[in-house]
Length: 380
Image 1: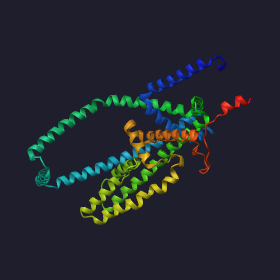
Image 2: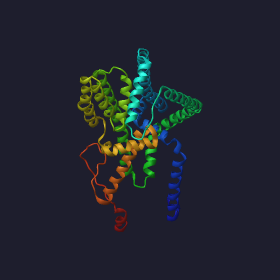
Image 3: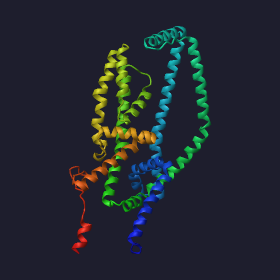
Image 4: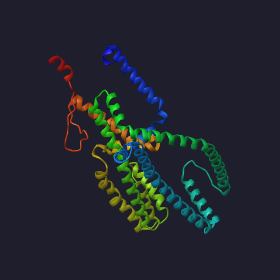
């Protein structure tokens, strides 16, 4: 069929193909994050799928891989939520006991005096808080909170239906990408005008970034979060261990780190009388928690997935701003695509050496502008 098309028709076909791909991306934009998450899951569990395929039919192997993926996600998340709920309930009971043992009138007078003292120091502000104004504010907050809760409950039914629909679509996409991974890679190589070699480079870089973010960054963040929470517990604050672990883990996934919580918390412990515990929390973070990243990153994060810390920070926050929570993974992958494109351009047009992602770190290849297409026909 290739010989049946004239050069003009081939150019028109290329334009129509680009338009079709662009329209397809726009058409599926609502499910972009879901497709990316399914692709990431299929990529990470492909080794398990290949192992199962050696002993089971493809359908059973895909089903077993799906069940393993669900267990690997649901069990840790469910256990974390359960422990957090237990911790929050215990903390709420402690607060309730403290409130019962505290004189509310005396506490209210102290709070009003403290707040009014702060307000007097603010220039051009002439506000005096009383118990009546606090009651009115509490009534307004309760009314607004009730209205917000009603809106959330009204949208809960639609949210449940949407979640079920998204789960069904995710399962189908996950299984399709898992069982047809090789065909999809071949299709991408054929569609990419830069050629199969450059396509493999992009796929290798993206795969390394996915492994580095999910298999490396999340593990490092978990270790740092648990270590930071443990330091607070050992330092003398025995409440909300699991809450601190979850919070510090989330902050460690984002390149900010849990130090923005543990450092001020340790200083606060020292100022409120627990000097030894506060100093221990600060010192533990500086000596141990920060070095967890230095020890585990070379082991867990592939060399191809290591971005400059500033680029990684920008990629994560830009990804979160555009894609929500899953931007933690999508953002760095998009950034590695941008960086790889610039590297390929510099290699092709300026002869700059680049790391191609081979297994041997020292092996390098040069991507240069190829003029064989113009010289070989003349030679023949």
